Image 1 (tube, helix red, strand yellow):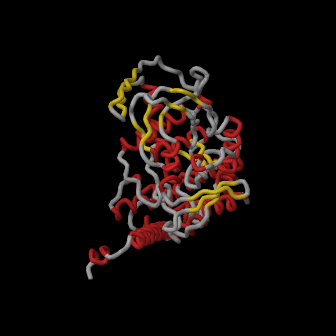
Image 2: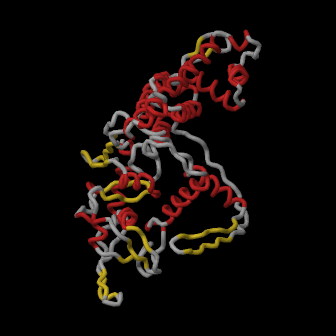
Amino acid sequence: MSTGEIGAILSSRERLDRFIEQAAIVRRAEAELLSQLADLDKEGAPVEFGYCGSAATLAQDVLRISRAEARRMAERARALFGALGISGEPLSPDLPNTAEAYSRGEVGVEHVDRIRTFAAELPAEVLIGNTWPIAEKALAEIAGEVGPRGLVRPIRKLRARLDPDGQEPTDREPVRPDREIWLRQHANQWEIRGRLDYETGLKLRSVLDALGKPRSAEANGGTPDTRTPPERDADAFADIVQLAANPENLPESGGEPFTIMVTMSEQALRDGIGHATTMDGSTIPATQLRRIACDAGIIPTVLGSEGEVLDMGCRDRTAPPKLRRRLTARDHGCAHPDCDKPPALTQAHHIHHHANGGHTTENNMVLLCAHHHRMIHHTAWQVRITNGIPEFTPPGYRSGARVAASRNSS
């Protein structure tokens, strides 16, 4: 039977299991490749074969890869599996626990690079002290449960403990702004174009790069991130808008913070069917409105036969500032274990949906970024509050199907 015939009779779950196992095989092979490069370096092969003692140059030539990738390979090999010192003495690896997790196929190269970069930025006395082995083991364990971005916050906390002095900030002279933006609506979409001054453009580009990085398979619900660069930029820009649209960051307009008014029956919202109508006549699908409504005020409104407003009630579902502060203190940003988005880029999600009777309370709400908010609404990921801490259960098809407690609450 051919490979195609085998693939044709596999169920989606079986195909996904094979996909996950194949990824683990690739990771184990990558780790073995780096181990071999480290051994070649320690045995003096780069000198023996005329590569001037450079493992990176050897790898670049024999593997036909770029100098940059060869240098990264050599640095990973040294950090994971050790090297020889200048006088020929063996040097212990900085990341032995990460190397073991990589060799088991539990972490990927992005995890390795984040931990390796962190180690490279620490003072030498920290790496040879007694606390680094404990910290590195903890990072390796966390990396086996989350995507690469999920390491950002644990690394930040460890950096504060291991290297509290940090780096001094730098000041830059502002330039005179010369910028214009045109925003126009076409049906149910918006078109944006304009120009920015050089400094603002650089800042925007850096923010888009930071927020629009390709997601790991873990952070993307178990599938590769297939977004194009423009699509990633647009998603990052949506995060920027979410940050700016935080009611705490905006001035009030007529006594109200940032507001979008729509019309929809309560039953349609509860059932998640149909469309809501905005004040300008455009429509929003009910499923999308349920997600928006997690962190929005709902104002019950009575309409007349011709659509005129006869009565308007009060908000009853948005997280008030005091509750929002408690959620921020508990979750420290998006509570999903694969994420590191800060509080300002999150929405307050009702675990038991408000439209179905859920209360706007700390024990029924969790902070989620837009991406993980959509994931919780539309995939098999589950979240609950256990002993006052958000706890996430991955879908059964994600390897191990373990319950992943929020790393933000530690």
